[in-house]
Amino acid sequence: RLCYFNGSVMPVEKASVNIEDRGYQFGDGVYEVIRVYHGKPFAMRRHLMRLSRSLKAIRMDFPDLEQSLHKVAEQLIRDGKIEHGYVYLQVTRGAAPRDHLFPLAPLPPVLSATITPCPLRTPEQFEQGGKAVILSDDRWLHCNIKSLNLLPNVLAKDEARRRGADEAVLARDLHTVTEGASSNVFIVRDGIVFTHPDGPLILPGITKEIVLEIAGELNITVCQQPFTVGQLRQADEVFITDTIHEVHPIVAMDGIKIGDGAAGPVARALQNAFTEYWH
Ligand code: PDD
Image 1 (cartoon, rainbow, N blue to C red):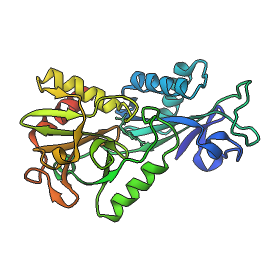
Image 2 (cartoon, rainbow, N blue to C red):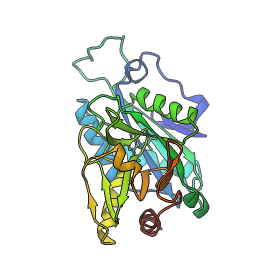
Image 3 (spheres, protein in one colour):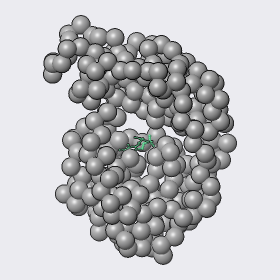
Image 4 (spheres, rainbow, N blue to C red):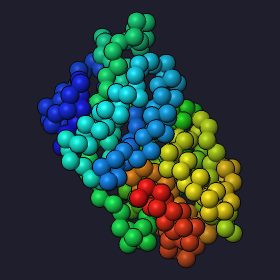
């Protein structure tokens, strides 16, 4: 597998990080995951805009962000001969002797990226859907920043796996549903779609943004308002969205069926339109 590091593309094994990189010691950095379809980065502009908002939120400057990242992604796709896959991009504040205070004169940011092949999901995988569990959302209050600090998300994912599920649906005080450990969460009730509004409690997902636009085109009503764990359990449909899974039905929650325990019509309509959008 290939990566980009220090200005060039190389095999992943050849790249080595300074142990005093602030990303490594403090999680002091931000990232993006960008899907590649048919050899082209998908929704790159939206990802770059979010990355630029994340950088601003952690008070980091990255001159020529857009140009450099386009080049990196294109080089990785070309050299890796990737048809379908995803690019992982991360930017850290750079390397310096360990100190909570970052140097006032900015360090050169450290940009790294990997590319991973990822086959398109089959219609059968969509129909099969996934299982989720509800867990307490005990993250910080800046979840809109796509920061490298993913320990709560990693632990939630592991807890989901221990309970035989694929995703953890997070809820503040085990009451208000926010998002998944690595996805946005939607419910459908009487044909109306509900999802948590953007703000500090969730990551503003690029897939979510696109799915909301598609819903508008399909005349599906969407309410961006918080909903509860109880409403989620009673929903006709639950689905998640993220760059890797696109629109993905959740057919069981804490081992209990959602609706009739199968992929639902609203998720299917949105996924079909999503597929058309990037083809
Ligand atoms: N995660 N919420 C969280 C907490 C996420 O980590 C992600 C994506 C999303 C969905 O965002 P998007 O639609 O832009 O992928 C929502 C990526 C895929 C990851 O960390 O690997």
